[in-house]
Length: 485
Image (tube, rainbow, N blue to C red):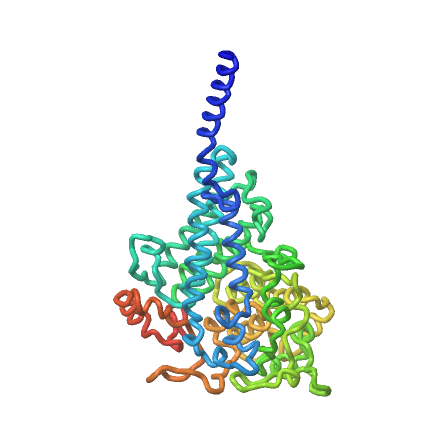
């Protein structure tokens, strides 16, 4: 009996110790981890970034409307520049600060502690890639709003961050980009399968960074030509050199990681957008082979390819709609393309920056690349660009007009990039939408910037007021720091 009691006592002790040892695990939810990996944070940031740039959601991304590729059918406030009705500026601001920059910043902190699983070189690569995308994000913010928080940004102890001058931010992120490009090591890994943009290809991230540097250099060509030249000359040999190298977010065939354009145009079952007559009336006389790739003919028989004036109501069936090509579930979002880089090189040569080749040669390459990227043929591209109205030596206007027009056509479906390119070069001629919203005392013009978020006006008023004054007024028609002419 004593022996039995002894065994029971020992067993009870074991069970008691076992219970004590495991009791804290009862508070752990395996489906809600307290720590997140750098790879998860990075993946989330890249999806948020690509979706924001690709989206057609009127609450966030209206740049296809601003660039006058599309116009709205019934609800036309966004085409007419009503930014406050849907808090558009607030959402764009939050997407980049909260959903992209914050996650990437945290990813860099987390990866520095993942030394048990990752080599020092892989950690360094991941941090460099994070920084490249942070540079991309701040570039987008300063070309959207102008002056924005940078030095004080993301500091939870500073609830009212001051705004840095956009030109100063540009200088700082340019230095960060250079450091990141120098840090990338092609012999080491990056994010691997968690990298939805480049699949862990470090050479691809070098092309991404250099293509971004090329774009940034061209952005300041009118305001700081010396720095622009330095950046462009350094980047040009290392940018995308073929359509096969185009940098894209490739979407999947089924939700939740599908093309946002499909989600907004097809899955939603809405008929909100048709072609703007601005683009259709340019493409048709030029017999542009991309028309059927960009748009579907009007459903109403006999109307063919036809666009509506921006801001004017439209019956969906009477006008061309965005094509089935770009609204397919897997249609990718393009961050950088060979066509874009070739237009930049053509412009660089016209500005006296010797990147090699001729302006005409790069212009031709850019047009060919765009048409072929969209599914056209080399033969179609040759016929198109040898027309007198398109040919570089005979087309009307200055190099800014020729390159501005053709690059705007090539950037179709990349509304933000097209809008920024248009603000730099001022071509083609865009019109003020019918019924456009303007503030009291604001001279009507095509939109040049996003106004600051309402939440900043309410919760960070002193810094907002100073920033608004510094950029020339918190007006949608105010040119930003890079837009000199």
